Amino acid sequence: MTHPSQPHDGSAYFLYHSIGQYDGKAQDSLAALSDFTSVWGANDDEQWGMALGVRQKFIDGWRRLINAPQGTLTTTENVTAALHSLIGGLPDKMLRGKRVLVAADCFPSLHFMLTGMAEQHGFTLDTVPLRQGAAWLDDEDMIAAWGADVGLALLTWVSSTSSHRIDLEALVAHGRAQGSVIGIDITQAAGLLPFDVSDPAVDFTISTSLKWLCGTPGAGILHVAAPLALQCEPELRGWFSQPDPFSWDLDRFEFAPDARRFDHGTPAIMANVASLPALEWHSRQDMGAMLAHNRTLTGMMIEAVDDLGLHLVTPRPEHQRGGSIMVTLPKAVPAGALLEQLRTHAVFADARSQTLRLSPGILTTQEGVEKLLQSLRHAI
Image 1 (cartoon, rainbow, N blue to C red):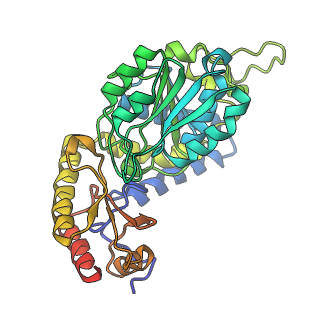
Image 2: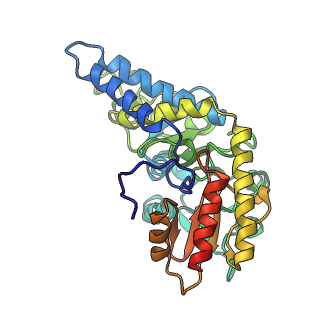
Image 3: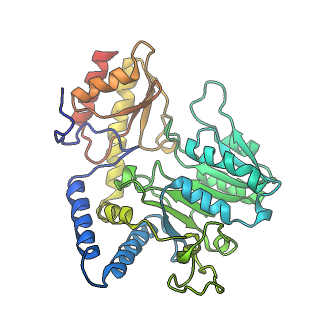
């Protein structure tokens, strides 16, 4: 059996839906953290200037990635915290007595959080169900459920359970006609598929720096379009919510005139430090080539899945899917046992129940795909 600490070349790494990797990632992160600790541990006054400068570079890297205007994006720990901050800052009239619309295949953590906020904020959480036997929510079902009484709709760009990609343009156009606040979770495709917060224009965007962006846990982002941000007064607030965090007049608190109002206490900068090298690495890549590489490998996998007689959970058309291929394993092949067998051959994937999730990225090779497929042929 392969020892867990043994290094692998990444050729059969299929976990980009979870944690992205690239050559030199460990060294880059280690160097960034070492530089940070050297300054932070020095007996001088350079610490805050350095730390806030790194955080700003992280923010600017994300702004460029999704074309977010200056002052519309800030850091957060994760998508759940980002959505909570946004909803906690909305004017009461935007949600009270209205519906908040989500798809049944949204990220479960967000659904858990919305369920807990519904009573306090006076909205009804409406979860649009999947059709019987379906692996993802059809766009037309979301549109059919989306009326003028929807105060906020949260869209999932790419599903983590099927890799289904929504028709964002059609859904946003419908939402605009209903007068709803429109937000989107781009976590499962950020860094692989091109995304622009203004095309079509959404009101807010949430994501993390994991997965295709190859960052670390805790490096989330919240983008809020300026017209909406200026109407928000987040209930979670603190010294960093102000135009000048170092203004400590207890009787003169005011919100910053931009996305900084969604900040609160001292920012968790370490995740930004560790993720910034990955963002900078990603900015130097050819995104078109990265996507083409993914499409070549996923095409090989879809063809082989058909030959193996496995059920494909993911949509076949490229424009309807993200970067993952997901298949249902036969009941006679327990997912846990299969993953352990793959691991012994340095093939890395994961599963949700009997759904095998496979996401090839920049390190994954055609030889790695063949190794995966050979292992599947032996197991099934």
